[in-house]
Length: 414
Ligand code: HGY
Ligand code: MN
Ligand code: MN
Image (tube, rainbow, N blue to C red; front, side, top):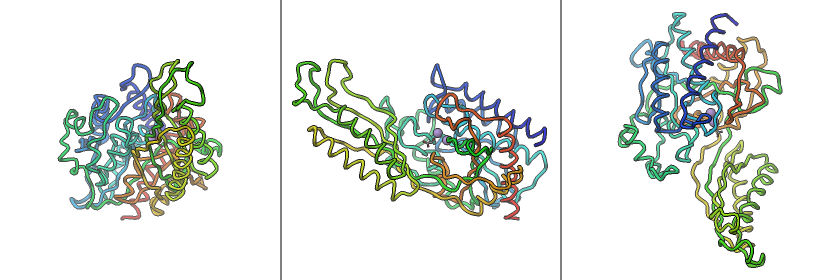
């Protein structure tokens, strides 16, 4: 690894620290879609894009885009990037590292005077996590041309619609289609991202090549019974919504694990929420993922059946509101081969192939073009947590690998 690469990695990590300071939360990192923090981040990262020789601009969906012209006006486009938004209580590398690495690689290629047979476009996607409106991949769906009109009615926790948030951010909902690259000559999309799991660390590898991304569905679920007195109401006459929901939460783990899928209930609110009142209503979330959409949907059917049974036994009602679905996707062999070439260029002769259990913007971009991903080891697999961490030498190796992957794509298109 060259000293220049080590310096480049150091700069990327320092920039991750700068962005970690842009947060809506007094304690911890939180940046969500169409907020002042989103705007400040786009401004800050746009400056770094310009310093790398990219022309930064914000698209009609609020994504940050940076363009490096190709050899001709009609040259095809290679997309690089990741996302700049976060979950609440986030780490400082999920999405951010990949976006800043893409900018760094463009800068390195320009410094070396490399002329590519295509235009490069780096994208800092604006809403991969779905933190504010529940539905994820909004920014990347806009670029892929799969934006749905029904999404304008999505509301955040304060009741603000996506439409009104768009307008307040200075965007015109009627022009969201202008963010799309559909119909353009796009070669593909390469994304570098922390693994968000422990497999690379367990295998003592710095880097890995992604084989595909699990399909996902997200739901808001509700159990409705009847609030009552915690003392006077006999057990036999209770309609306790929290006990019903609790049976579902346990069933999610059992049914998902038995089937080789992954189910998580990340949020649960019991109402009215007083210590001496039997919960009459419970709202809870379900994040469900599996390697195939068929398996994912089969497990959802089993969970729904278990929930209806639990509700019937306790004289409760069970309501479902599906917020999000993203199909399982596979990488393009030719682009994955370029990523493997990149990893081999760092001295790892047998790149480890991994299925991504985490979702990524690449899932949405897969509706537009081919994609591949480079994974970077993260400490103990921790992510979506302030202790998310990476090693500087792994980031340096990742920069070398990502640059070599871009050059491998260029070679294939020469
Ligand atoms: O939820 C995920 O897998 C991603 O971090 N949005
Ligand atoms: Mn994430
Ligand atoms: Mn991410």
